Image 1 (cartoon, protein in one colour):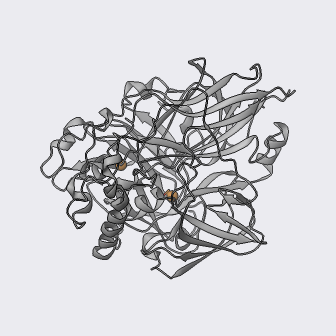
Image 2: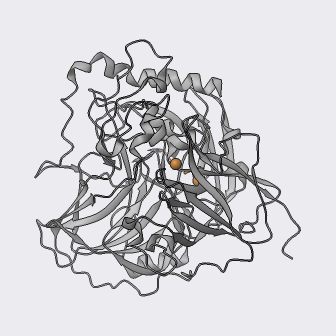
Length: 559
Ligand code: C2O
Ligand code: CU
Ligand code: CU
């Protein structure tokens, strides 16, 4: 830890150096409000380049490196995974794999600090899953090789070195990992969907910039406690993005790739919410489409939606927006001893405190963007869809999407194991069952034999935490004590939301809420004892230690 801590400090300092030199120019940042007629094209995945589609035909090399001029929003440098195949070059390729295929990749670390890739939601033995104990030093490499056993779905990949996950992901290292199978391809044919054209992966990430458009990651103490919020939200790296669309169905695969920001997404047409069909979440297609007009999406989560633009005329627009909600950040957290005063993220006040980079040169404090972060629960536009052509399209969304069942598994006897999600006020960090991460400890031990029930209990005076489990999907069984803005979206008597109905790997737990999940640790059946992770996907929380090892013991089959 001391080593990576030092590297963290020096990189933060570097990241903010440019900003420091041009502090006088602050305030000239482009408005975060959409200009009424302009916008930048949403980058769509091409056959190569940034977020291009890559169907691996041979073992792949992914080189984590710093690339000048890459970020679409500002032309600034960003970190990316570079890959080459058959003479083409990708950065952060959207990997497209077929279920049953073998996946082989070598991570080469060209960063100046340790890293390791985690394949989020992708089945694989713990050595394949990017446990932080496997982080490789600068210049080193790590070889992955495993069969793709997931059902079709929108998975993703990002770094997972302990203490550096947020920064490396924020500075650019993240992309999609899409798995396809027969069931999903049948749906795509039925709806005439083409990946990259009418089936569009979109990663949403909020960023702060310095005066030259460089990415700034310089969390202060409040940011480490509450999460680091950006001043604007990018889609596929572009600012104020817009997509020209035809009068037909579009499938959007939305990934919240922010370190901390929660979205409450809706589509506005003439200022009014337009319904859409939720068809999939973290672990692929739901059993049936659900019509919604808003959806919460927390860091790490994915949703797949169908948006129907039939009936619209050229020139008309739909705007993917964030709708107001209460972010439920406890305003008095910033008053704790040692914390900056008044965290106040909901209100957008944020002054970098000294804690984030105490080792940097004097004067570097406050060198990050002085534009106030975009308040988390505010209303703001994200992506403009502009209808520019009429096409004839008469496909219908099938009533049944997949063979999955919506039912939660029956709970085996005994109370679920409870994990309190609460603040350790003394140390100013978030805990799971009172604990923080210890690389060598295994505070949670489970046996493979039986489905296991866990209950995440969010402290009433806490904040929302998107809880993520590596290695296995789970089912949400119930949500109790939900705040009203969540409870009103319940779709059944268990309090579950539409987004809780499929296979999940990340579930948002609101303050005062108890979310019960069931995981079958016998599936997938990995060989040997496993050490996976349970953590909060607010990446500032994760890096501060809101993470536990989960040991899965090998037991003799099922009784
Ligand atoms: Cu996407 Cu351990 O996380
Ligand atoms: Cu994961
Ligand atoms: Cu958290």
